[in-house]
Length: 130
Image (cartoon, rainbow, N blue to C red; front, side, top):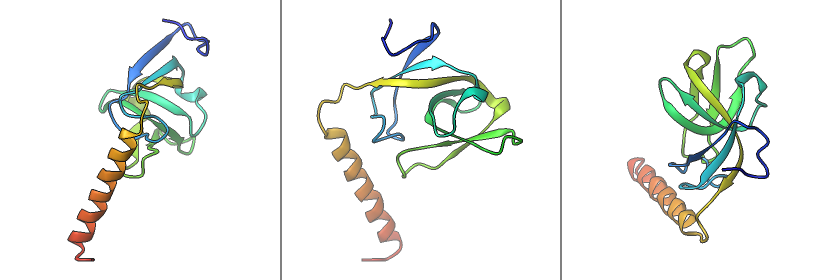
């Protein structure tokens, strides 16, 4: 396959199986990526990281202090926690250059809102707040 916005000869597409990057990237969409070296990635870039320990991750990169031996992967969806990945754990890194979505309606957004409200309601129940 080829896309006009992909300049690298080494590109790949990955299916998104989580809503951790919603609303930037929707669950079940496809991200189009170019291979990149970890040192050439700008802070806050969208990436696909393949980890020896954690598998395939789609996140924003937050580079720690350059002397550190790890990076932090952040999510756009606040219901997910950050992930620390040691540099020695990284197998491959891909820079996301675009995404394709099958979603032509707002059903996923409504589902996320509903799930979020349920989480808040469960938290309040546990705190005996109402």
